[in-house]
Length: 211
Image (tube, rainbow, N blue to C red; front, side, top):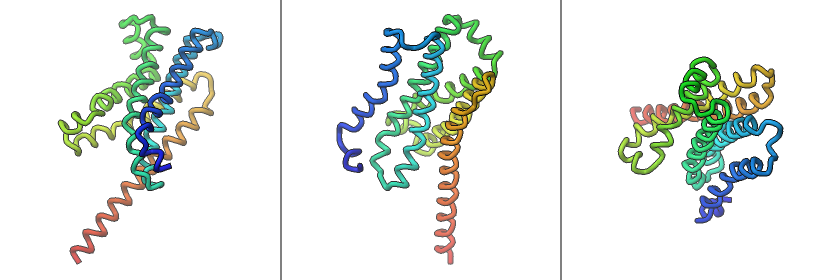
């Protein structure tokens, strides 16, 4: 596993695999395989893939630490950019198929419907994270400020689940929402626990030095 992650082809293969959901949706649209309401299917599917890539991105650090596989970090930036890619497609599908790309109607709809407002808020938070996912941005901001900015991904995760919950509330269908909430909740809880443990270890080490 570790040797495979270090292979030069790992990232290109991951890049291509991450495009497969889009390729399948495009093929389905041309082959008329998206059901009775293709527009709704595209909106829903791009949203689902945004959540899935968000889960994968947040899973990289726990898996890297728990398995002792530093090479996993090579995939995190790419997966994070795919979160933004599918979120952009999700927004585009909504704006195009639901609102006919009418900016005035889109603005009114965002203000009127809470679940749209929350989803749009998550997209706005994602935008600076995608824009600063490059080495030049890290150098310009400095590591500490860059890390602080990218902690906004936790707020994005919470808003994304809330967006999904409110969207499904009308149909009283919460099974998928519960799965995503459980996965993201576990990943966020692990980070809180790991951070608290790291702080305690640093405090113990400082205390030992003073003694």
